[in-house]
Length: 212
Figure 1 (tube, rainbow, N blue to C red):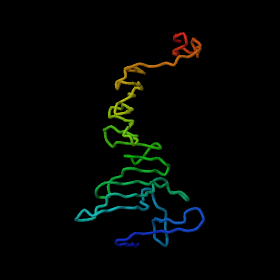
Figure 2 (spheres, helix red, strand yellow):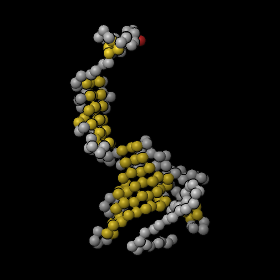
Figure 3 (cartoon, helix red, strand yellow):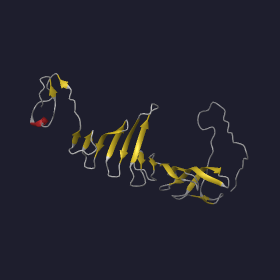
Figure 4 (cartoon, rainbow, N blue to C red):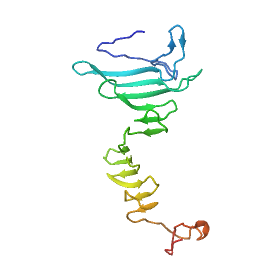
């Protein structure tokens, strides 16, 4: 084991040549056993990290890191590896995001169950916000009462309750579809479906302003 200290400097890596591929990289090697007789790692073993520390006037505080950890069944030719990101103000921070070996991304969870999994870590509401440079923002919000809200322009535009009822213009839908306002049906030049038992329940506005 050893270390390299660079005082008031920086590290440069140059790569030249026309050959495509990885011409420059830093590598972290991790095993159990010894340097001369390495053995397989185990699930949960940390494989390496990049850390950042800053001085607070008294001591250095590590506030952020990027870490790799073996996470899964280790077999010949296969070491499932997660990458997780810590951030905070001291003590290395806390895990904020993880990318699993399966490619799932978790924010607030160490075991994301889908391509993007956001967890509040408490009973507080969780939201995903999309915003442009003109300050307009849209959010998808999961509340602590299991309501899913779609917010745009600072107002809730649509709500889905735990029973599957959808409210547009209301946050407390009283029916499978509850519209607080008016709905527009495009007028068809001809009857689009036959008024029969097969299409029972279909609503279509024809040129004669009749409903089927």
